[in-house]
Amino acid sequence: MTTQINNPRITIQYCTQCKWMLRAAYFAQELLSTFSTQLGEVALVPATGGLFAITLFYYPVEDPQSEGQPGEVQETLLWDRKRDGGFPEVKTLKSLVRNVIDPQRDLGHTDRALRGASSTAVPTTATTGDTAAAGAAGATGPTAESAEKKEECTDCR
Image (cartoon, rainbow, N blue to C red; front, side, top):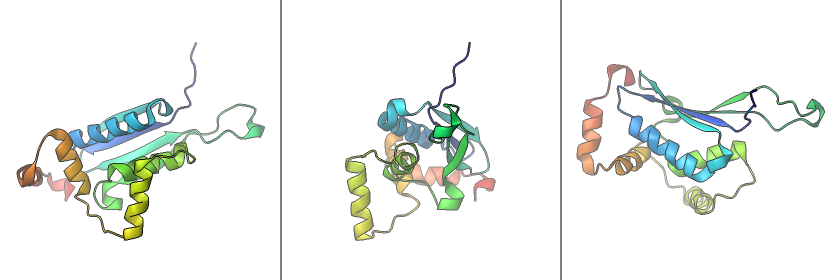
């Protein structure tokens, strides 16, 4: 007997050549900590070619006429490094996930930080996520960042 799980699934595809596994794991940990039982799974998917993409798979809210049967699985690309220019900030990623799975949910300090950032219009750079992931991995200073750039694969440029 099988049961269907209707909780959303998130995949984080990361380039193994670029050594982005720790960054992917950090994002997974943050999403699981924030959304805990609202997510069915956060999967880390190794890839190559400079890929870093976060995708959400979910069943849309049930249509009253569907008689309790779930609809088609929806796929939403939340973040793509090449499309969106770098890596997301954690608060931005949490907001993107929340906007799909529970738009009424208050993310507390994360929402306040996003509102504050949009009102002051401070530009963000693609390296913001690099700093967070490096800090999570225990690396500090420019040495970790320059080492990552030296080991970048040719497909990642």
